[in-house]
Length: 461
Image (tube, helix red, strand yellow):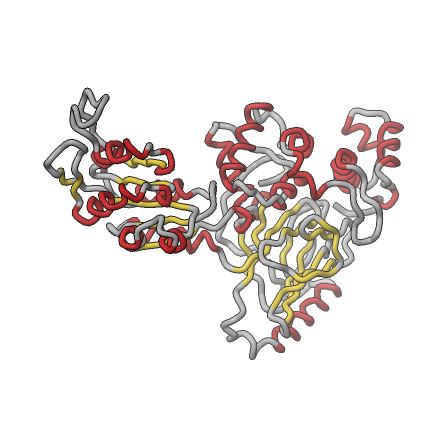
């Protein structure tokens, strides 16, 4: 997702550009360093305990690279605006050679190092000079945001879901509240080839005395108030898929009948002495550890064994930071709106832990579209007003160089002024003209943000 709000899917061609000749002296030195480290890790490359690592570019002015995944070598990757050997990104706010990611042979980890960049390198919201990378780390260089990770948990989830879709096995989907368990269940149904409907029921909402009737139906007169016969959810889902959401909350007395329905593919409506055959694929979902529920006597072990023929664990959104911005764009598209987001707001979203997972992100985007009509970019102003907790990492503090940071409101202004200074090479008159303001206005704001235009003069964008 770029500064101007365009959203692009991942592209398959590699981002890294390699040049055998014509490299600058610095790039040549980086190349020699990479070759030296590559040679030193030759014997290490077969180690099975080192997971492959990658960078996912999630936000950048260079729209062609957004969504791409760059596999990290076990050597050195140099990143900058004009590098000849390494990862070149067209970002005017990025230095020619901005940062390096170096493989640490001894520890089998990756180290991030700023390469003397003009604007610094941020790691998880803080300016750093050198720091070890942990999975899920958010890196900011200029206006570009990248997520470092080991493997792709959702790829494994989707692969397992696709494999399960083509079978008749029962699937138990595990994960925290709001991670998208029902979305995954719908995807399994969609790719199952089953022609019947997808029906979901929240077992926690079933009234104990009426639960059997809800699932299996009832005959007229089966109980007080049953003036008309009613088909249950199993019959509604005939030929399709039934999701038992929050299955851990299913009453114990109902679990016996549910087990028989799964095993025999037959149901008996309440008040009937006849069984009805049904063709239903059953999926179940819960946030609870069912073996613990079994040990506590709240869930039947035989029903668990029948439901858990295939088990899929959906990771929390905080473990899938590379998906946050693309999911946000998807939720806006569901409302027929394009999503534009500033770099500061994008960084804040990536750093937020999302305790309520995808449900929380969708709620935020729906609120943004409702309040603003998506006519402007989602920015820190909106986040501070609607979700102030998401801006916690942009509160006043001290950066790695020891300089006191400005306030939340001023910080967003400072970074916008820095961007304009880079684009206009420190020319205050040009900035004033672009903003439609007098030069005195620009100078006043530069002083308030602790910026000097002269520092940016002569910089090539």
